[in-house]
Image 1 (spheres, rainbow, N blue to C red):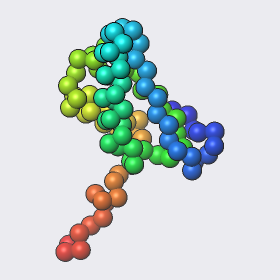
Image 2: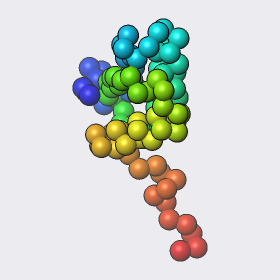
Image 3: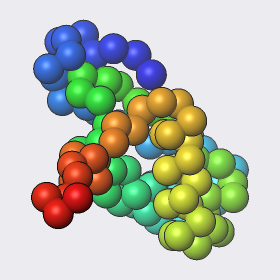
Image 4: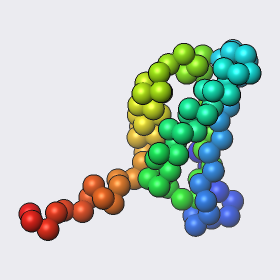
Length: 95
């Protein structure tokens, strides 16, 4: 997690790495696609101008999408990279 060289207003970039221990190319690519989708769902909540690299381990190839998704959610939250969604923070007009 490094600041982006173009400053805080730059787009956040996320890279995914899956080594050969994860499995054959088809399995590695599927794991990367699933992880990419999980991050895409949270992209608006990530801070701007960061470079992130997620290293997928062996278990990510055989985990369900829900398990992988919740693991990525916990990882980003633990690293302090998830901002609260604006829709969740706005109180309702009725009270």
